[in-house]
Amino acid sequence: MPRVSSRPGRLGVGVVGAGRVGAVLASALRAAGHAVVGASGSSEESKDRIDALLPHVPVLDVRDVVERSELVLLTVPDDVLADLVSGLARLGAFQPGQLLVHTAGRYGVDVLAPARAAGAIPLAVHPAMTFTGTSVDLGRLEGAPFAVTADAPVLPIAQALVVEIGGEPVVLDESARPLYHAALAHGANHLVTLTAQATRVLAAAGVPEGGTLLRPLLSAALDGALRGGESTLTGPIVRGDSGTVAGHLAALVTLAAQEPSLVDVPETYTGLARATVQRCLATRRITETTAGRLLDALEPASRTATQAAAEGAPETVAGPEVVHTVAELRQRRESWTEPVAVVMTMGALHEGHLALVRHARTVAPKVLVTIFVNPLQFGADEDLDAYPRTLETDVAALAEEGVDLVFAPSVAEMYPDGDPQVTVTSGRMGQVLEGAARPSHFDGMLTVVSKLLHLTRADVSVFGQKDAQQLALVRRLVADQNIGVRIEGVPIVREPDGLAMSSRNVYLDERERAAALVLSRAIRAGASEAADGGSVGDVLAAAHQELDGRHACVQPAYLEVVDERTMEPLAPDSMDRQTPAVLVVAARVGNTRLLDNAVLVWPPQGEAS
Image (cartoon, rainbow, N blue to C red; front, side):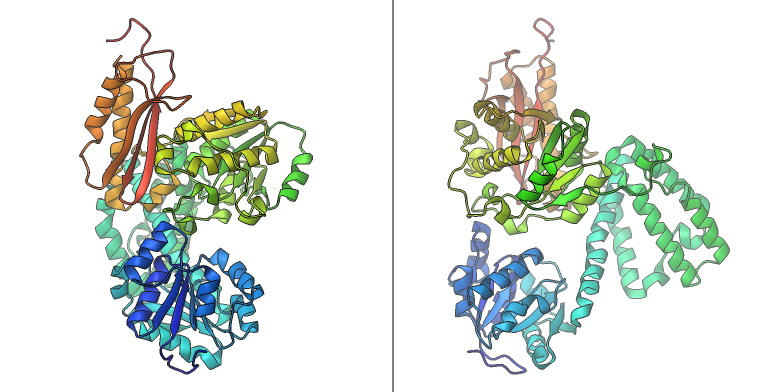
């Protein structure tokens, strides 16, 4: 039984969710004199992190961690926390007097109410910093602010824990947590979005290394804002240059009309410019007359490129209905008599996903999108918990594309009895290329695709060409199982610099992002060789010349020319124009695995140069 005082004594600490945050905080508590008695972590990545930061700490299941610990760190994703606590409470895992600490920014201690009812002491401690999940973070904890929320009698305990690991406690009321977390997300996450937009516009302007150009400017602006707030603002708005602002917007709207992947930029510029005008007016940096001129300059171009292309279109778009259960899906689906196209995703949608949705809209009057992070597709060394879950943002994007229905089930809804006993196997096609590196991935993918095809009863299902092996396997599934659906592939959508769009691209740092372009260059070189009449061996040689040894952070996994239908490699001397061939490449760039490919087109017989 733990001692409850204003300064915790030596406690037995358990960590549930040994991700980047949990393992680091547990290591810091051990350095402060506490004993870490157990940690939970199912992926190989989590186990490696435990070995590195918490050597000799046993890896246990969640219930054992909780039952052995006097202080429990709950460092799991926000959306998982409430269900986890309720489930453990039903199992009777919590103990009277046990300290229960979660690190979710959006919640105070009310989310731990089931544990409080069992006699545990709930504490909310959120570190306002980013984590790498390595020992580097231990030094960065010194002086880092931690938002602390707790009942008044035990607030000193939470503060003492933060001080022990070197942090600075900032006390927050329960009611203030949503605003606190919104402020952090608005400042940090949206800064990333804004910077990425600026980089993409620079690329469109012919500046491929936009990050290098922006770094000194943005660093100085951020430093100035943190030191002096709005008083450090510079630029056309504070100068009252309405003509410059109007020119910016005209250029951005024109660009967005030409490049659909930049359609979000004019609206973002307009919204932030209006906010900047209001703040400059409020702080008397500009006069009301100047503010009026600036707002007038913003008004004509305030529509997005999509809205500008359709005069009279409504300013707001009704969002698609979102259902979460199989029963709801079946009920909505029964009411539809028109053909249906389905697009299956795991969320974190980008322009590549939206291209699939737009294609679906052209082949069926009703479009249904599924958003489900399928645990069966994640291997032992892949961190399921780290996969981004952005349902609200995804639904907003789908609303712009006119999607009729979104099916976003939970894991329990899709697999009510846990991992299914009867699954779809991918056979030899799923054991090569990506399947060799991720042995269970394609079995998990085909199992959930089969389920979703039956649940949605779609007439057409749309997949991206970027995952060429997945597309081939889905076509094989439909043929072998006589599933009455047409499978359509959509060409790869690329960033302005050529990188294939992927949800994984967000994990690349600036150096890795630049190095990753070698994949698309290799693919282009190989495809060009095929178009010139080269053999399979010539195609591979041209691609290898671009790929091999160019960047230390790029570790190729495979580069092959394969039969698009079977994924079997083609002979080096082959130039069989009757076999649909695709050049596929995979590489680990830093810690991120990326794919790319190109369908090869040889010249007709007798036309090779």
